[in-house]
Image (cartoon, rainbow, N blue to C red):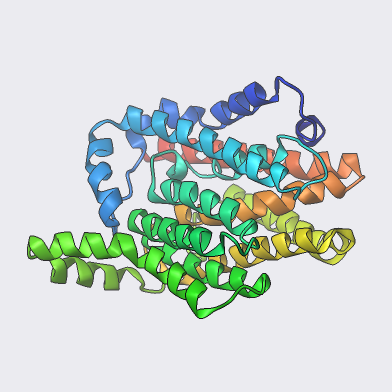
Length: 336
């Protein structure tokens, strides 16, 4: 039902996507007072808005939901316009919205949600960075967007590696291109550091930045039975999709499409590697993985001709997602 519907481009699907996402966020709107604004290791730009959202939690959830919908359509446009799926559909945006609604901790204007906005823009630019006439301008923009994203969520700094990898993949690596990337990346840090220096707080914030990257145990997630089942189903679908897309589907595609999918694969690897360098907000950090996984799953479901198998897998994912929600409410009622 879900997959066969969103594999098309019918005019009502944007409204249906918003409606499904709203249903997934109902508990966030209903229990908005229980939502938590990320307090640990706030990045400088996120610190500016976090205090405001702590005082207006309903607005926090509402704006986060609107921002998620905007990102879903942004990602959908990037994936379909770059021919990463066979035809235009709303599946990439739909899958992204579902994955970004998988935990109650995500029902707020959290830093990963903001970082993802910039990462989608980066993905859009970096996929088409092969044009040598504008490579230095675009790679500067990629570095700049990465720097801004990391000032909302520090672990986003790892995505500067994606820019370097793209230069190698498109055979555009040069001293000028590398310098353009890092000049763009360090520009927002330079102006922020200059501001902190002027107010004599540079040493304080530098120490805070250095303390961000302390390894954590990435499997220390919610321990509920249904959450584990959800993660198993998610991992099975993701791994199946990765295997088929990279070993079967894209082998038949033109070279430019294969290079674009290599960018997606490195995006995923960087997202996973960065999991080892975050601290207490590791649950929402998994939102970074939602971007590349949404792309790969969309390609998989588009190419897989077994309609019943597609619907069964994704419906099972949705079912366990709701079971996780119900399990959480039972725990809350027992505690009270």
